[in-house]
Length: 158
Image (cartoon, rainbow, N blue to C red; front, side):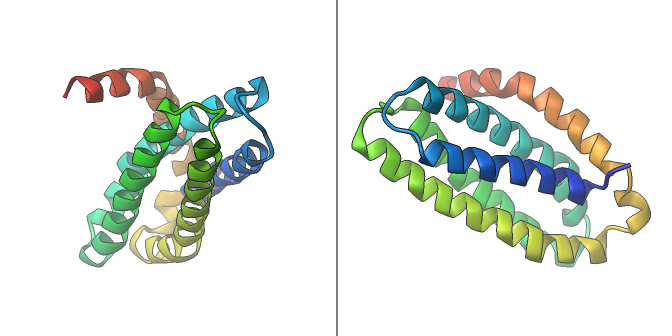
């Protein structure tokens, strides 16, 4: 059984590959659109599952709260940029510039999670809880993937 850390890291590795692939594309090509669509939906589902299944555990412990809150705040900032990019014309020079800001910020966020947040979580969450917890994360992420567009619609209505 894979741990929560393995599940999150596997997603991060997939996201890094998509970021690199998108960065090599040009204009509103089919390749850019497909990679962006996959990245956009997967990251949104990943972040929601991570907040619900991982960060909620950290927040149960007083000294895990700051770390969890910081990461959740970063999720919000990254989500804002992703929504902006999702609405922009992919063929405009501004799109790739804004994308590269997202890429930089998200790569920093992933490194911070893997290095600092995981270290803190290992002190807060018992190892017996993390084994098999990757399956719980994956299940939640699959559910969240089905909700991405619905959540976007609801947000637009607010």
